[in-house]
Length: 391
Image 1: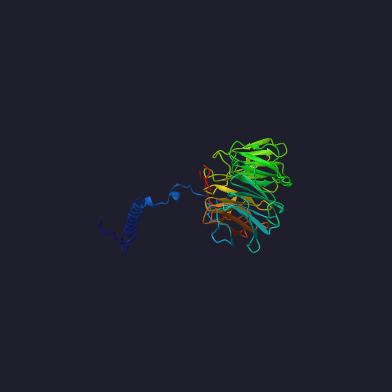
Image 2: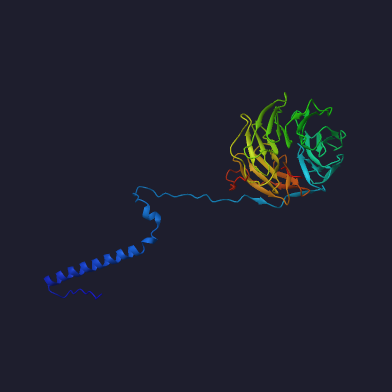
């Protein structure tokens, strides 16, 4: 293209005409260049600018808040480790005064522990097979059940046996629980029955409760009105009449493995198996599941514990974890990592420690984080995951 030049040294009339012609030409050239540039770079225009309608000056801008995922605190170093058993620990219970603990093991023994210094106060012997279950009554009585179906009662202070091994069940006693008034002990067995024992005579009371399948857990409600039995379903019995008043069914698994009531009796929690490794919350007015499953575990939930005021739940699992949950919002607020499967869990009486044990042959004591009751504790992004193991 030839150069375009505007001359301003002409006469008034001639110069004015040429000036206007030159300005018009320059304007046309600029418009052409701008149009070509706009077409060339149109593919780089942000989509939201191309499609959003113009906003008036009075309309404030809209911002989308994106929630940042948080990581749940995970602890691998326990506060203390209790060593003494020589095989897998199956059950643990803390005395009401908070000073002692009793554990049962596949090494055929129970150990009575001093929680202050971690020492073994008494090695309790008498079982002929692995001791699967243990329960404490008001710190005065200890009951234990073994793989062969034998029951032994022990003195709560001395750890001395009060009875010989009493064999009523035909196979493993998997769970024991005293009634709140202390008059009765319930024993759940893999022989598909639950027996009720008089704690004065240590005789069974009437006929066994036929549960239809292996029993994994028995738990009295805090009032003693109900007895919950975990088997292929969760059976709720009237403790006085022995009538089954409700059957709680899960939709994804035919088994419930562990149970715990909150102190006021308004809710019952259950733990599932490897095909349903979730915690479920049950409303005891309707006997219906309340809310969604509590997800995060990936294996059998062998035990569940609740702290003294019902604000925290701890779960022991075959995935080598103890999870700490806050009841108010159903969040996992801490994860305590073990090296092997954790089969039992309990709280200290002041709720400041969680104690869990299992295949590591030890009990580990974990400190409960001081901020666990704060509502802004990080929330885990966990999703539910979809045969009883030989222990």
